[in-house]
Image (cartoon, rainbow, N blue to C red; front, side):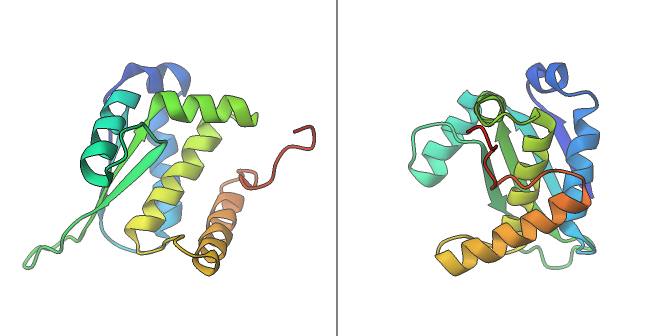
Length: 152
């Protein structure tokens, strides 16, 4: 199950049917995996507070993933939570010349892959994760987020 919670209206003001965008991205990243995930579309202040508390980084970031602990005896498997900061995401999309919906799609895929155990701590992991992201995004019709525009 994919649950989308919109905490700030900026997301719904900027992207038509933002919940559907998130659900489509998450489902594509799950690609047959089972589990429950909650995606919180929030603001910079909330993400900054979470980043400071859980990562000792007192600044907002685009996306945070929080894997869930195993829950024995449950019929469903909780994967965890993904939290996105509107201000950071919108500024990145604008700076990179991307549609906000496409950038959100990429970040949801990225966050969900973390919940599924992928990481980018070293170069080999980063290359593998980016390749998986590119493949998922291509299936969704989203351009490669790691390719800079020609005029950049």
